[in-house]
Amino acid sequence: MNRVYNFSAGPAVLPEDVLREAAAEMLDYRGSGMSVMEMSHRSKVFDDIIREAEADLRTLMGIPSEYRVLFLQGGASLQFAMIPMNLMKNRVADYIITGQWAKKAAKEAALYGKVNILASSEDKTFSYIPDCSDLPVSADADYVYICENNTIYGTKFHTLPDTKGKPLVADVSSCFLSEPVDVSRYGVIYGGVQKNVGPAGMVIAIIREDLITEDVLPGTPTMMRYKTHADAGSLYNTPPCYTIYICGKVFKWLLNNGGLEAMKQRNEEKAALLYDFLDSSRLFKGTVEPASRSLMNVPFVTGDKELDAKFVKEAEAAGLVNLKGHRSVGGMRASIYNAMPRAGVEKLVSFMSEFEKCNG
Image (cartoon, rainbow, N blue to C red; front, side):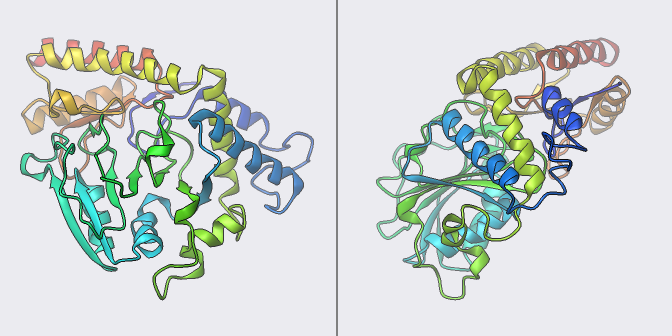
């Protein structure tokens, strides 16, 4: 086996223990004579899989009983529309713009009502998180929206905004399960799983029960109503069964490795290795203001596009893959999610140091 260190932003690296378990069960899941890919979502075997996955996620995150957990299709991008369709009772919402995904979410919400931009970091290419301690929250806003970790730009809200009593809606796709979280501070917390939790094909939405009602915007399709999925236990239609199965294994892996407190410590240590090198490097430079740095996504540049391209090519040859930055910003980006071992970050830093000696 010749596995590489995969720094992709998503679909991304998964724990090897999980992949080995899934491989062993591929043809016969626990004596069923079938792969999970083949079995009915209405079967007792799959019902056990989805219920256990939800129970383990609730344990991991300490999800209060008054919150529902929904396993939904459409990825995080479909939530850009589902959120206003289900929550925008007054047709007003406040958005904080810290990157492309928040911009896209705000643009989508504007199809359904008035969107107020409370704060933005676009003035400095989204390289920081604006001060959100005293925002002009709209009196008639239905919710305040953030993208908590910005995959493309490598920034993270380390302090949640003061929403002045309005429900906070947060896209946590690229920091999901990377550290402990107080779910009770959110109205909706959701994330596409393909970055830090599982294979592509699903979003997990954790929603306070009082926000799940029949009172949705006129014309909202049945499949776009949170109540449809909540009432059916995420089994209204055929769900992404195999994705749920793998996510369930990742939840077990996290629980068996110390939970989210342990993950946070590991992630802080890995990120410190890379950021400390960037801060002392003569050639490489981080692009994010230190106070806003993400533990999950670390963008950096040399300042020379040709040198950036050379670095990405040579890194790939050395088994360090998917380091090219997002097409909208260029440069490099190392996504160092939960499943990225410390050894992978150490090898990256070592390679960067050698590259600097030869090209600095």
